[in-house]
Each structure stands twice: as structure tokens, then as C-alpha cells.
Length: 129
Image (cartoon, rainbow, N blue to C red):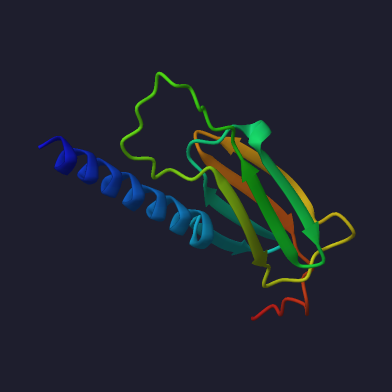
């Protein structure tokens, strides 16, 4: 019975690792909202701290990198580890930035990263009588 239990535990651990790798590759989920002269991005990044996250902007490519330390203590008997340890996300922004540094603000609170980017407005508003 010990062999079956051990094999099941290893299988569950491997499934958790694959789930985490998928999340690290495909996600985190990003919402974008365009409002007149600013683009707001909302990124779900639970489990990270503010110091774990690095942002950079190169042209209209926003890079979000995050990495957290993994506790390798012997006392922990991890059965399943699905939460991501690393995020490397590149997002092509669908706008033209205003000025050199288009990022107006970046805030991380309760696992949610909110980035506000100033955009260049094209054309002019037409008043209708």
C-alpha cells in the first residue's frame, strides 16, 4: 500500500508542477481600459510582493517580470505547488505613448498590479450642434 500512496503523491506533485509552469507561461491575466488620454492595465499577480516585480517599457512593449524566492526548508512536505514562482510577460500596447516616459503610475495592492500609461491622442474632437 505504501508504494501506491507514494506514486499517487508523486503524480499529484507533477500535475501541480505542470499547472504552475502553464500559469507562468500563459498568464497572468491582463485587462486593458482606454479612457481618453490614458491606458490602464490591471494585472492579477497573487502571491508576489512589490519588491518581487520589475517593470520596463521599450517603445510600446511593456515587460512585466516577477520572481519570488522558493522556500526549500526540509520541514515542508509539499504535496502540490501550483502557484507561479516566476512571471515573464511581454505586452504589446495598442497605443502610441505620450512622451519618453509614458507610464504615469504603477501600483501593487492585494495581488493586483495597476499600471496607468499616458497615450497620445490623434485627431481632434468635433463638436456637434
